[in-house]
Length: 421
Image (cartoon, rainbow, N blue to C red; front, side, top):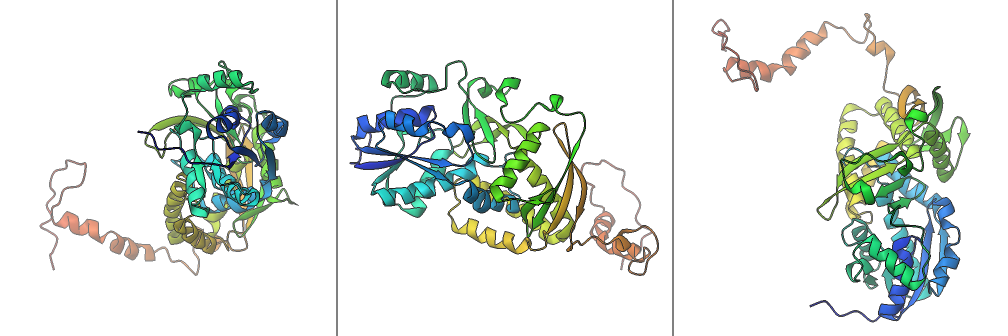
């Protein structure tokens, strides 16, 4: 028995203008009899925002609200993600995941401003976004009612959604032929669905919209220098830029050289695997530069532990737990590590590759006089013999006890000549 629908007077819908949210406006009015306020967050979608107000109002929304959140997104979310080093399942730079808590945060704020008693989103019941939106609602105002149409309505596929849109006179750009589900923002562009649901299917070149094919990229490499202050990128090629401007500049640069394409099968939070394509040109360049600078200034123990933190951080972001005590605690550790991550990294971009070409920092832990193979006053190579004897002592004791070496079927040597103490 399905639960009884709550009484809703006014709902704030996270509105992208895509297929799903376009049909949600008339569906909400038809099924809940409520007023619908359409809210769109400008996270760098560009031309996708054109005509959204007219479209939302024509679909039945009583009000359309657009907020330019590009600088907040870049400074408070993307650069925090960058400083953490978080990458989900070895490849995904979390472009969609990191955007959802910001959208939901402002959705809650708008609900308070316009006196709404509910919020709604267009995430499907099989995906991760439903969790990300609703955990944010829960963290910021659990009093708000939550409507997730994909978990209620009869629509079960994008083809069904297209038919409903036609029946309600809602104009949409998706068709049965080009039926990819895409998410675009300042950080990345994702592609899912359609023929991509077969992991054996090689993506057609026409799928990629933000990057040129590495095969068609320039035959000459291009150098870029990125300056960081305490782990935060502040300038490109000597030119200081705002956070959003800096990402946009590197997006254009990376796109021209085929940088940042990812094709992966990932584990969704809801328990199933999904196949997705991601284009993150600027973010991929920034992540590579940040790692190079950290390699110069972080000590071994800190870097090793920070890599462990990055795995957990990526999991929290992917799972929608941005507004959680653990994420805040991990940020405190990460912030503490980023002070010396100050300096300049030079990279060479060439046909989809990012090649380190130099790095420098006033806090560098690299000392040429320590690393040289020649004689010096600070390191006597003869000292290494004693270090190796102590470091390898457990291996020596194991051998003296006649314990087998893992994976090797070797004859037992005669250790009787060794004197036991």
